[in-house]
Length: 272
Image 1 (cartoon, rainbow, N blue to C red):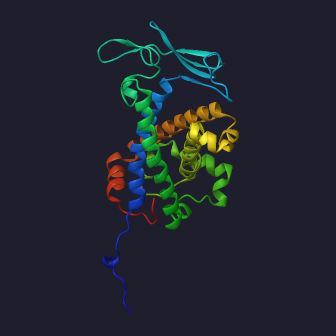
Image 2 (image 1 turned 45 degrees about the vertical axis):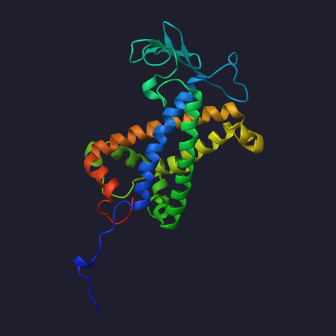
């Protein structure tokens, strides 16, 4: 009988190759989709519910602009955003009145046609990548082993304890090599299985070709303008998730975390 020595055990990577590839491709796609999406939004910086979306219809969110001021309106609340949104200066010092400034958009100049080209190209890469990642994660049991919510984890006391621990820097610094807690699981489940598919489905709903061939999509979301609003709300939530994610990485050891996502890192028993 052969006895395995510790030196005979081949260390498993903390992050599988498919996870690492999807992570970086997804990061690039989401960045380009966000910036090109803001270019598209600049063409009509208002959001509505239902089927209506003309200039005189009531918008629940709008970025207003003039030669003197810029503002963001949410319902009846108006916020002055002069210098940042609606009214800002470009690199030449000229005042521009697009909703989002050039440094936040792709391309950096206003072009609805070019913005759509960038957006649609990376949307297809993103959609195929997400589909392949889900299939592969089910096949290698990444989802079942790392994201499955067990019965005791649904208890309110456990969720509150996890949330409380997740807000303590000392705990965050020691959590880099530990299994996902309930807050992390809920966050990743929400992003992978709700927000990202919602982005894809609402994006398809806004396409005139898809609207003509699959009118059920428009009915599902209550109209094209509702789909557009949900699309931007989901984008905002993804940006919020990204900011929190980056904060957690910085607090738990950015060099170690980044190196693990590039090389695979050292496993702690299960793959992330």
